[in-house]
Amino acid sequence: MDLQKYFRPEIVAMAPYKPGEQPGATKVIKLNTNESPYPPSPRVRDAILAASERLERYPDPLGTSFRNAAAGVLGVSPDQILCGNGSDDILTVLTRAFVGKGDRIRFPFPSYILYRVLAALQGAVSEEIPFDSHFQLTDRFFQPDPNLKLVYIPNPNSPSGTLIDPETILRLARQLDCPVVVDEAYVDFAPRSCVDLIAQDPRILVTRTLSKSYALAGLRFGYLVAHPSVIEILRKVKDSYNTDAISIAGATAAISDQTWLRANVSRMNQTRERMVGALSGLGFQVTPSNANFLWCTRTDRPVEPIYAALKSNGILVRYMNYPPWGDGLRISVGTDSEIDAMLVILESILRV
Image (tube, rainbow, N blue to C red; front, side):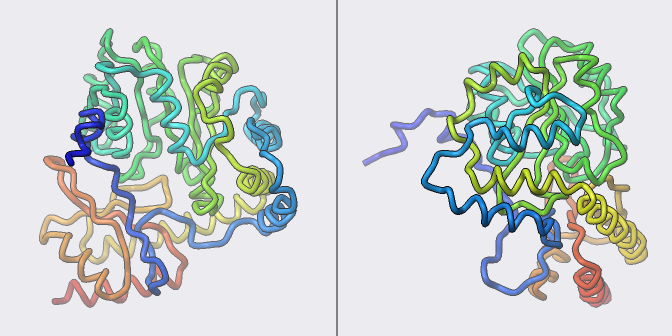
């Protein structure tokens, strides 16, 4: 029996999103999915334990405790925040809300490949416009299009870790007649955010996650910051209970501990800068990063065999290939001891 015939043709034809490898119980040094190498704020565990005593009740569908805490941190109103099951859930809600079959979604290339998947799910057209050589937007990205319904700007970008300045994003929003989503999954490692732009142009929407800087990748919690009228309509689109009681409690405790966040980010950024010097010394071209990872390329030898050799030695990094752009290794910031071990193995591989 051909069961494929019952699916929408767009679903059958689309390529699935491929997340980074998760090794399970195998002991490895894991530098491939941009997680924090350190545990979250101690407040998170206490909050989760307290929430676990009330699991017979449905969670707050709006995550009010988190919205209140996050609003205080960001200097916005709680009515400007929508909670989600990770920022990927928020991106899905946005795409469902703004984009229909045959519409266009614009995003830079290379960047987060989930945008392409979300477009395919809607039967929409992905308009992937290449960055320039410095991972900045070209003039083509600013061209209006009546069929353009949504723009995604990962900022900092993955895999490069590069940043587009807020002034450029504001100019983009004012030239295009559609919402511009600034995906700030890694912004806590960067010097500036675009949240303040929402007050200048309500078509700018900012997504955030607690998976990276707050060390809560396993909890799955993200959120959107936008104009209150945008949030009000998007509540119609999200699942009724898209965040559970455990995640709301843990996320609220995490974002309330800004002292822990600043210390964690500072420690990881220091390690990142040390990695830049060490990897450059081993012959890699390392793109200056504002995230918790580095994009590393080479012109003297292919990098895929380096990835495979690291993996065979119990070190996972991410090999990524973007034809015709090229390929490279995206290496997450780990603990200092993990990075030291990776560098020792890497040096031995490169000597062969």
